Length: 274
Ligand SMILES: C[S@@+](CC[C@H](N)C(=O)[O-])C[C@H]1O[C@@H](n2cnc3c(N)ncnc32)[C@H](O)[C@@H]1O
Image 1 (cartoon, helix red, strand yellow):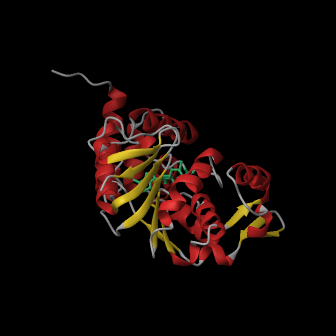
Image 2 (image 1 turned 30 degrees about the vertical axis):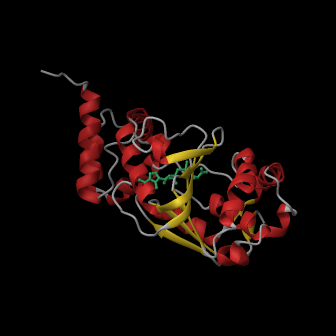
Image 3 (image 1 turned 90 degrees about the vertical axis):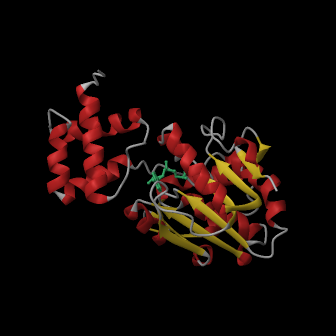
């Protein structure tokens, strides 16, 4: 007889309730991440037990939407990890230049900074006009913000530094206009970005693409789920297409390791074999 810890049982029942009622499936997310986020919400609401959140989530849609936001970490940046973008420019752009039309998928794009960074890079490399960028996330609030392309002024200094370090060819300020405390990204960057709600756990392939970026998302999934999502990526990428993961993510220990060659081991850039 296996005796699970009571809080483990409560968590698994809560995740089951969220899945059955709302269709969001967190059952194979990293337990440590889920526990941390639930404990945080429990403290904020003053509940004593995780199971108290179960009846709340089933009967109060507002509480449920707060919990869904808790479970989706949307921290992101423009040109996050500049060395990654430098490598993208040097090693992946030459591959993209060989295609007449380019399709790029940003899976888990959060509030859009990653997709805008890509649009800037492609404009500078003369590729944007023949590219469609699919930027997807399951967090509709984050997607709404991404679509607007309005970001706080406070971050701009850091983003400018990231941009320069990544090998940016212009001045970062030429890509937005300032408006009080915010900046508004240029309309020309938005024109080929398709923002869409897509859940990596429950939705399927929607396009055949040349490049996939899924950075700092799989880190929240357990090994089996990472494997399942890698299957989705493998089915979405053309042969010779490129997959980019986050700095703490890799293809190691997935069934798909042999399907790719490493373009840049340190920046987690992989090319699908022909
Ligand atoms: C930390 S952000 C990463 C943003 C960006 N890729 C970056 O590296 O800066 C993780 C994003 O993954 C999204 N995410 C988590 N689980 C997801 C799922 N099952 N389907 C789609 N997006 C998911 C979250 O909503 C969040 O916006």
